[in-house]
Length: 74
Image (cartoon, rainbow, N blue to C red; front, side):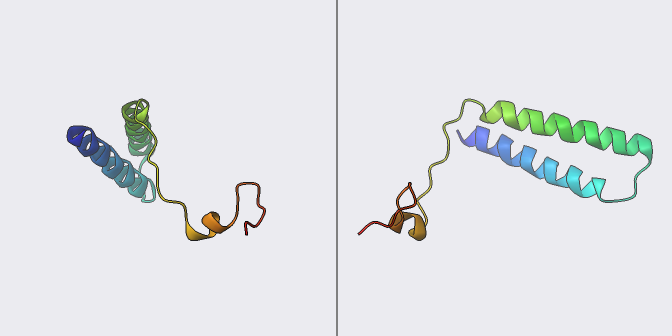
């Protein structure tokens, strides 16, 4: 699991780097390369997370007071 998290972190960092690069002045060839690499990184990250269980986080305080139907609970 630790190796998988490290790989996810690397993909996330690469995606951020490529997105920042796209906000700079690039030639058409450079932009095509960065776009392609960005797509590859996103796909690799999706493949890596495809069989991972979803991360469950505690409900925010306001959701604990209001039911799923939106009705106030006593």
